[in-house]
Image 1 (tube, rainbow, N blue to C red):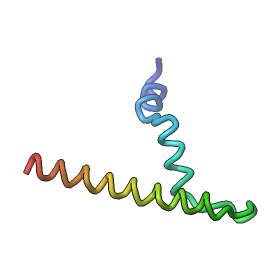
Image 2 (image 1 turned 135 degrees about the vertical axis):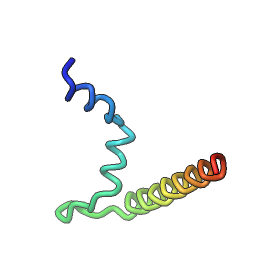
Image 3 (image 1 turned 45 degrees about the vertical axis):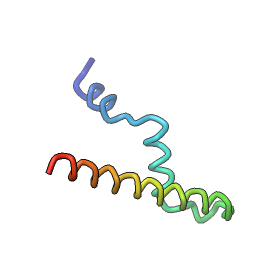
Image 4 (image 1 turned 90 degrees about the vertical axis):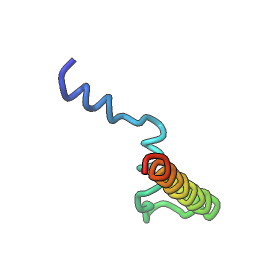
Length: 64
């Protein structure tokens, strides 16, 4: 296996990574907007940010 394939497979996050890319990119202006879908993605963004903040807080509290 070449070095680029090893690096690519190491950084491959699968479905979760693909979801993060879709959630945090700007929506397509040509596509019809769906209110429920926008609200779901907004709540998911908030929950991801809160989880990451809690994880950072836990790591800082644990090791410092």
